[in-house]
Image (cartoon, rainbow, N blue to C red; front, top):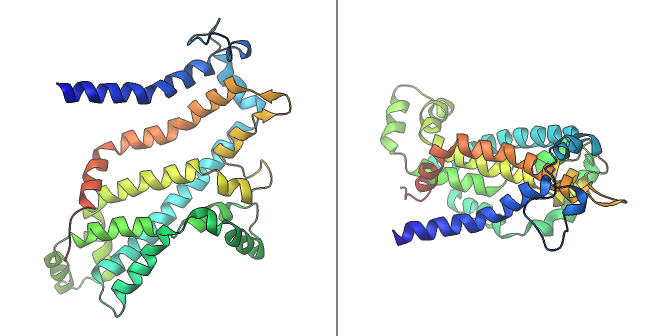
Length: 267
């Protein structure tokens, strides 16, 4: 009983910022910084949500965000699954040492590689392009680590039986391994999509204008010369939360199982 009360108390604390965001998104501009502050403004202005789409090209930012996040997630899942299979199920000289070096890249802060990465994108002529927003983050060791742990937990007898039936590595990976690590793939899908969707620093550096701006960068454009339109920022933020929330809800039943699978030991 006490643990349930504690969980409800923590949930309420975490919900307060979201409730305040929704309440602020429905206020008139004059009521945003009213003193004393009130949860509900003098009127409920649903028109703030309509104004979001006309104040800035918010639809273009949503399209860019979806395009970058979906393609980036597909690329990360593909690269991570292939590399994880190689590190988990193939035997070659230096495999473990190579994996630990690969894993050590997770300890490098992202801010350290921003300048070299920008110079590299500049040499490729990719500044202010979709590929510059997608490709640099498609080869992270995080996804490889998650899927490797899941693949190591699969009994080798299944692989041996498939090999005796004439299956090659591609068939084993696609028809046997991939369905068994589907929950972990769901976890990686959620994490990767959210990372691409919420990324602000890299788009701020590599994008020069609104044509390729993603949602976090687009929210910054509400801070115009006429002052910050906080009610519109809150409305746009509420809209931008819908895709990630729906993704988490749809894949919810896989998340707990997928996270638990990554903690299992392997051979």
